[in-house]
Length: 335
Image (cartoon, rainbow, N blue to C red; front, side):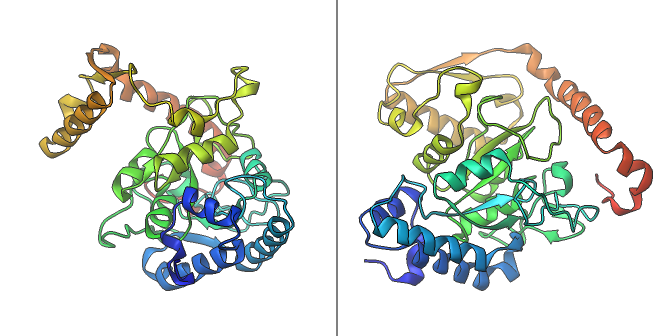
C-alpha cells in the first residue's frame, strides 16, 4: 500500500479502484495533491488560483457519501484542475488576462457542472496563455508555466498549466481547450495524453472562447484510459449526434481492423527525423495490434494554416474589440 505522500503517482483508474474499495479516501487523495502543489508550484507556476479549503470540504463530503454506499463512479473523489477559462461559480476566472484578473462568474461552465456531478474535486484554476491565443504559456501577467521535466523548457500552450500540473502529479487530470493545438501541444511537450474531441462532442457553454468556429474542450491525463474516463463524464454528444459513447468500454474492444490514415502533407513532410522515427515506431505497434495504417493525401492541408488563421484572427478580433479599443495597454504584446 502506498503512503499518503505517494498517492499523487496514481492514475485515475488506479485511484478509483482504491476509493471504491475504501482502501483510500478522497480526503487523503486531495491532501496529498495539495501537499504536492505546495512543494512544486513555486517552480512550476501551474496554478493561478488554488482552492484548498473548498476542495477539502468537498473531499470530506465525498468520503462520507462513499462510506455510506453512495459511490457514483470512477471520477468520484478524484482531484483535478481546470484551465483558467472554465467558468467556476464564485471562483475567479482570469482567462490568463490582466483585464479579467478579478472576474468571478456567477455560474459554472457545463463541463464544470458535469465533472462535479460525476464526483470530481476541483483543486484550482490552471495557468494558460493569455486569452488562449498562443502556443507557449509564456504569460506576461502571471508568469510562465514551466515544464516539470526541465523548468528551463516551456510547457507549450495554450493549456500549459494543465500539462504541467498533470505531468508533475499536482492533479490527476485536467481540462484544456484546443483550437489549433492548445491541448495537444502541451500534452506532447509535457509527456501526457491530450485529446481534442470531435467538434460538438463536448458542450462549451461557460468556456471563454478563442474562436467559436474552431474551439473544442477536452481532457489532459496521464493515461489513455484516464482520458476515456474523463470523456465519459463530459461527453454531451447525445444532444448533437444522438448517440453517446462509452469510451472506457470501447477501449477494451481493441483496434483490429481500424483504419488509421497517415497524412503526407503538413505532417511527415515537415517533422524532424527523430519525431518521424517515433511516429513510424508507433505506426508499427498499431499494425502489430491489428490496425490498418494507410498513407493518405489531403492536398488542402497545405492551405489549412492560412485558412484557420484567417478564421481565428477575425473571430478573436470581434470577441475582443471593446478591450482592444479601450484597454489595449492591459493586453500582452504577443496577443
